[in-house]
Structure formats: structure tokens, C-alpha cells
Length: 102
Image (cartoon, rainbow, N blue to C red; front, side, top):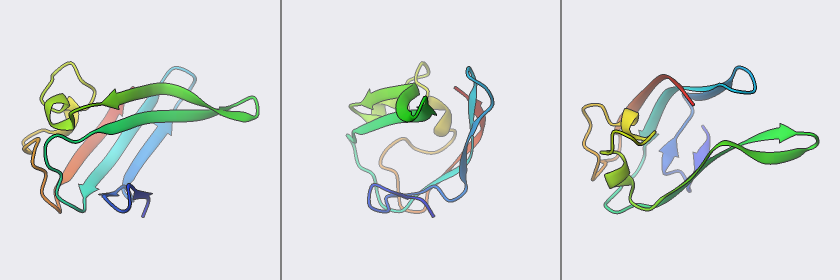
């Protein structure tokens, strides 16, 4: 189990799949282990190992209000909500991510 934010999320069934220099896919599930109330802030980023050092990759975003962002169709987080309420997120809620391309 990957530990994120002190065990807030269970990412043990979540994958990040790089295919080449221009495409990265995410697949699997994201399970919330604790209640998330509005507003919640997050820093979302990805890194790649390039020429001997880790550098920021295609995802680098500050989220000031995750609840609002999950309701925005132009946001990359919008795809995670499906039929789940954006906030509050109750413990045990699982979001399915089905080969989303960045």
C-alpha cells in the first residue's frame, strides 16, 4: 500500500503507466481512508528521471479547492467523480480511473 498524506489515500491498486516521452496513463482505483471536507487543498505533480536527476514532468498543479475542481469539466480531476459526490468524501469511497491519458 502506498502511503500518501499519512494514509489518507490507498493507492495500492493505482498505476502510473508511462508509454513514451509524450504520453502517460493512469489506471486503477483511488480509495479514501478518511473523510475529506470542503475546501481541501492539494499539490498534484509527476516527476521523471532525466539525465541523472528527478524533474517535474507533465503534471504540476496546485488545487486550492478540490471540491470545486472535481465539479469543473475542464479540470483533469473531473473524470474521477463519476456518480460520487465531490464533497464531503466519506471514508471507504473508491474512485475508478480507467486508463486516463495525460
